[in-house]
Length: 548
Image (cartoon, rainbow, N blue to C red; front, top):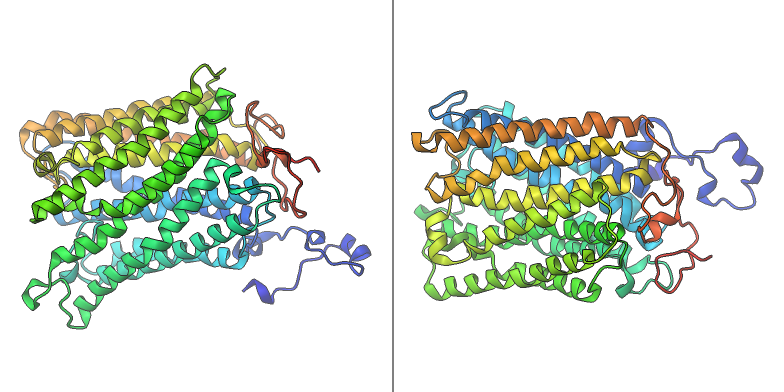
């Protein structure tokens, strides 16, 4: 669409407009056009982050309603079918609307800056891949208002529930298709940018860790999003066109859906955590004031995690009647993933070892991430063992496990990245005290919320139920109180940290606000100008400084 707009000129441009018309002589576009027709990677990164924040608060509000219902046994606020709508939509929106767009927002902002590129490889495609998201997000949210209410068959979209439901199911399938298209285009853009637009002298093995993790994540996205598209298209044809892929009555097999879905679904969890690994691998060396320990092994660890993520999908299906050979294969495959993940945790710890560490807010989030993510990793190795999994599948233990990985993993890393890079974006420093309050408040309330759920699961409390027996009442009450406090901490973060920065309140950020920070993003002024690295920069031997 932006192709038809005339370039924006300011009066002073006309003096030197005729000799050469380099685009950096054009003024920064203003008003709504700047955002609607955005092709600048920083603007699009900002749009992604705003969208993700909105969806995060929306899905968080659904989580608050879930925890309010579970505060006491008995049906308090909602009928079971409405409760199921809340849990389903909470999962879908958090994954596709909050965590993934936030990480893509960071990729848009940071990857071109980190590799010395002037922009993403396909700026207009970039605009298109963003604007598909709000459309899909609105479609998803609108399902609350259609006859029969929102989808209530679980975020995993299993048949037969998804074949039987009302119009909301069709709308959701369309919305997820659109999000998938957006993800694929964004991923192709990131791959081409990293492979083709690096500054001269930045070889692949000099890439920042964040860029490496995003390159591998982008390949994962391109590989698995079409698989999801196929699975939900088959659901659609089962619903409307008389096919029987997943309908046992017509000779189909609902378990086949699970196989296709989890072939997407398991790499998907690594799509959400690998960029977080990249963020932590950027923050820890900066505040330990040491280079990252074992850079090459980190790259190989990320690559092997990505490869292994394709051969473990059926650990989500141990209880579906799999032959024992299949169970053994997926059990050992799942345990194997723990090795490269352990390598990463070891390297982060070794980076901090004897470093001259200071604990500003980004570092707190990164260290907090290591602690809590490691717990999440261990609780994931336990259900990898088939006999254990048969006991704890579909209980609150699994909820505890994946929230430790996705909230304390992805979300905590996203917060760390925000505190680390936002001075570069806004040109002002955040308030350190408020940042620390946000960290400790979130960290404590998160553990109060999700740690008891391990015990609820071990005691046998099933997930996705609106009601539960009396013996689970105490721990659910504790979890709900923790949940409300965690929700409040995120509202505090928005009003006490983000808004003041947007208004320019705070100390002026220097070009390099962190003493130990390395990398090309710190070679541009704060706030980062609209156009950066228009000429490919000349780099030093480490590819972290511009020398000409």
